[in-house]
Length: 146
Image 1 (tube, rainbow, N blue to C red):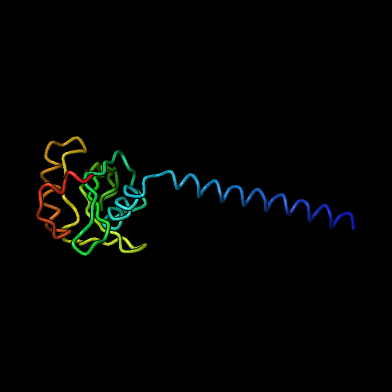
Image 2 (tube, rainbow, N blue to C red):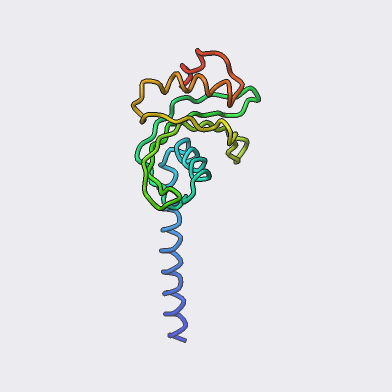
């Protein structure tokens, strides 16, 4: 009987450690910027080797709502990833997407716009063009909503 009590205590200790690790993981993941995380998901879906993706820098360029009332975002993502030949290259894209409940939605034909790096002077101009193509917005003052 003593052996069973020791085994039970040991199992409960492992369970408590497991629960603590799960809670800590959720808390740490909650600290990350979900707008950037969502944009990274969109970029990874377009890559030949998504597991090679490594975020270099990011910036939320615009956030607001599309014409349907869904939360909408344009995020600059600079990253390293392998191309089809296995070489690691650095790329930068402005990524436009909306949230529909818990689903991330984007148009694969116009969700990406190449940028010259996050510090590019043209990113605001590029974002203005993306507003109309992706969210049906034509108002250039919409960029001030960030």
